[in-house]
Amino acid sequence: MISRYEVQETNRMIQEANLDIRTITMGISLMDCITDDMNKLCDNVYDKITKRAEKLVSTGEDISKKYGIPIVNKRISVTPIALIGGATKSSSYVPIAKALDRAAQTVGVNFIGGFSALVHKGCSNADTVLMESIPEALDVTSNVCSSLNVGTTRTGINMDAVKRVGELIRETSLRTADRDGIGCAKFVVFCNAPEDNPFMAGAFHGVGEREAVINVGISGPGVVKKALEAVKGQDFESVCEAIKKTAFKITRTGQMVAREASRLLDTPFGIIDLSLAPTPAVGDSIAEILEEMGLEMTGAPGTTAALAILNDCVKKGGVMASSFVGGLSGAFIPVSEDHAMIRAAEKGALTLEKLEAMTCVCSVGLDMIAIPGDTSAATISGIIADEMAIGMINAKTTAVRIIPVQGKRVGDQVEFGGLLGYAPIMPVNNYKCDAFIARGGRIPAPIHSFKN
Amino acid sequence: MKGVITVVGKDKVGIIGKVCTLLSEENVNILDISQTILQGYFNMMMIVDLGATETEFTQIVDKLSELGKNIEVDIKLQHEDIFNSMHRI
Image 1 (spheres, each protein chain N blue to C red):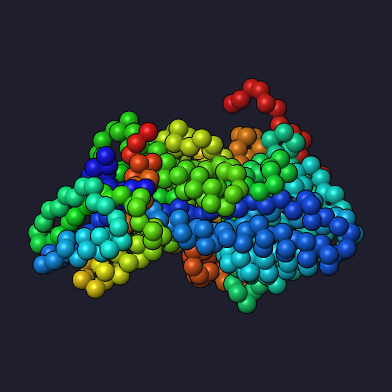
Image 2 (cartoon, chains in turn orange, red):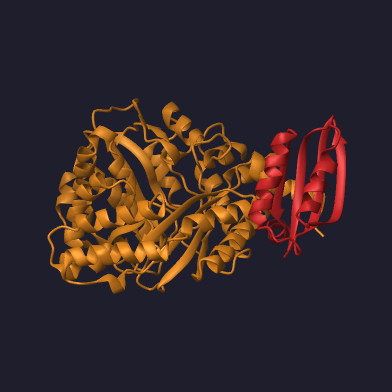
């Protein structure tokens, strides 16, 4: 029988260390919505999503109440819209984005992901239409998230797309300038994008996925930090053991919630995403964990090593606790969503370059970083190219979610609200890369031997 | 179906009585109780069997939570599987 100690331990994790299930995301295939008439297509998309996910939110709330653990987000991911819209021969997919937005509001989810295209080797006509629709789609909708996969380890990097994405991010920032560029917070560019990621803004329902699926993202940075407080001053073996045990427990909870959601929604269980996702709340921070390991501030020498330990141990502990692990699975380092990360950026301890180094050892990439509004499109493309190269060469997922904020300069602050948090405007290297980005074309696939 | 009830709050007369009355009204059987007072704070854990009740689990969660508000203690009912999944392989 369960002991008082075990009950207390679990409930302390929930009440004092912010343990929660970060998201239950239902992936839905829209392949059977395809038709050549745009209005009919939008109706099909809306009808399918609202029918399939009708009970998603209420089921999430019931599970939360039954087990006494918060389930923060209920979300939906769909087949990349570039694959759905092509038959319409339309010059804009904004109507589909609006249909997705309406569906999200009807079922009550806070985000719907999949206004996406997979262009890692090249752009089809439909991919190009989707890309060109991104700035307007993110401006006129509130719940739709967009993503592009511009590179993979097997194919290399589509630098034409990288070049255009820099411009699209600038356009999105300008279109949503009155909301501090919020459109850019709903757009991610990937290398090696996973097809079963439950986290936004990069979630989409991959082409290799079944009709519908339940993917669950766990969380709990606060729980890991509490566990590390108990091994203060001890060696790395103790640190690793503490993280692994905690990750195991957190993931087991996620697995149980995922199974229950799958059963109640009559939708197969897909994967658990073993990501530690922070929120702006104190005690729910990745940077606090790194600092608990012994860093004065995140960004100090040792930060990359500390993050590597954390990321690896979360996976080691979590993998055995779930029957299927997937998605992004690693520690997230979104600057604006982590109060200790924000503080480190404000103090200048954490720079864009250090964040880039950190992305070599964790998921996912340069995430929720606010930069000056006058940063050029080529510079944004250059930042993306660097991050994509890290992913391509190291066979890992990397991503960029960067927000140029109009009218703001380094040192100013921007408030995105809610889980998206707030961020200081970070300085960007001023030297230009225009001629490099202007070359266009493709970076060939990397060699997979001679690893050095 | 088993559940775990935890009651935490400032000690006063009648906490166990009121919780047990509610459970009895709902036909919920108590399998195990342990209770301590730590620095004036009441701390109780119950393992209960909800196999015979006709009320929805989540409604009993609400009723206990409501009772907790009335007598100014925190009362939670959770399905035992959250503890089993975390602490048992």
